[in-house]
Length: 157
Image 1 (cartoon, helix red, strand yellow):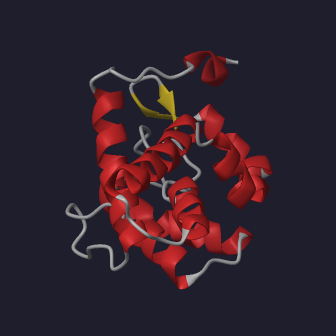
Image 2 (tube, rainbow, N blue to C red):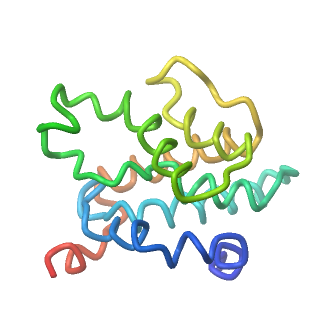
Image 3 (tube, rainbow, N blue to C red):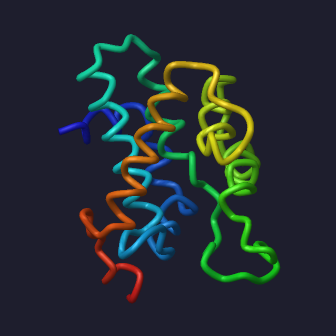
């Protein structure tokens, strides 16, 4: 339902090699990072509509797609994740990676960097950030409990 809006605001992200690479990493359950980010974007847009929240739709979509742009397999506790503290450190890594490839607005930076509240200490400072934070928690729960299933075949190819 929200595919057209996502493509309108983020075609460059959807087509980028690094974003496509997120199809190779599992996020929760059988859901890939790619699928998770798409689901968070759609859920954020759905919440916006259901709650009647006025926001910057471009920033909402782009922030949602890039919120987990950490570009590694967080299940492996090696060089990138030696202490298995992915939940705390990945927002900063995602922001750093996103800034290398895209020109981000301050609002997009806020969405990416603060989406793990309350695990991290800083809450979002904009409506878009709150929508993505809530959508991320909802999608993560549904994926972890296997209510939302991913296309694990993409990862195994």
